[in-house]
Length: 250
Image (tube, rainbow, N blue to C red):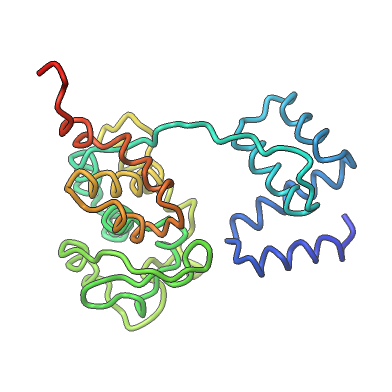
């Protein structure tokens, strides 16, 4: 791809506040698109014939549309899958079987705050107050606050510093790969059959808040969703949302 053409697209991604992950993914598909020299519709159809997953084609389509400005092709609709949710007991098991304090802190941060993994790994001591956590420049470059529970406060005191990353790795920030490995090991030890990812803990956090009677608009703000419709997926997986409906036969 021409350097100046890509630079223009890259700068627009920065201006829009895209995350590093999104920029990396978009850049990959834009380069593939330019290498093949197909028109946008042909390129997406080629991915379909190759058997690429719907979400992969959605991502590639969005990247190409952003790059070219063309709206002459449709982005495939997202598959409506319910998120994987762990029970509170399953999550507590994961925490209890994890003896390494840093690893335990990672699990507790993901579950008790509902933060995205990128936000947890970027969390700094300067952003933690006595009663809440300030998430600086979350998705969409928006600041917000989330919960700071008593149990999380207690374990944080074991590491407390004045500044720097809360979770430190060998080269500064803790890596996503290391974080995923921690979750996989904890899930295995806790004998959890479902695949546990950072987002599964975020989904579980939101669902459990809803089951505890928390207003969905508060959950929306805590999660950093720009649209309430995104948060409403949790009404489909909440046990209480089903339990509290009176059956017309009864």
